[in-house]
Length: 255
Image (cartoon, rainbow, N blue to C red; front, side, top):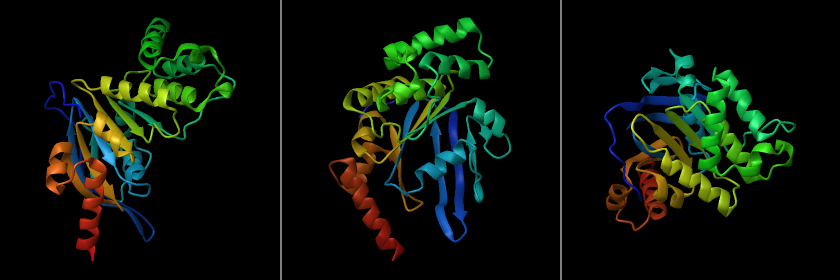
């Protein structure tokens, strides 16, 4: 597992007692956690754990039923526009206009953020190098493979160089080469003034790229910390075994 490179003191994520209910169903149960700049912070758990609900709240796409959350110092409920300016979001199901090339997609989104043509072309060139976009830039999205599409979706999310990046199961469906490019890109986002939230149910991905992780199960936060500390806490040799140990302990306490 990697370690933070000169992590700073600025709090980029501050979640306090967030609960989200849908009728009688509770998707999140009083979740509280904080993350500073300079980290890749993992949000781990199986499907249905509450990861996507929490990330949608942080992206201002959902309102919490109770509790508060701030991203890059801005409250997601009181200052949603400020949050949106500072967040890039990627999930495994995002689409692209089939008739546009990757370059056209990126130019279009850069225009939405008021970037000049020179700024846009320089940023596309940078992302081409970092994400290995290659011919993807000049092929229409309707002809993309899953990996090609996901690379352009990621480039679109970060075209304006946001300080906070939310990746929700972003590696889902990728082949080994596209997945490697994604993980290398995530590692390169670790820098002062930035935070990447990496949501996954694949524990080996988290072990490779995350500095700290939060483990969710059935809407409850089971543990938050550095991976070596969680392994020590559970007396397990890897994160997957530690996860199951924490889940079993949580179920026992619930009974």
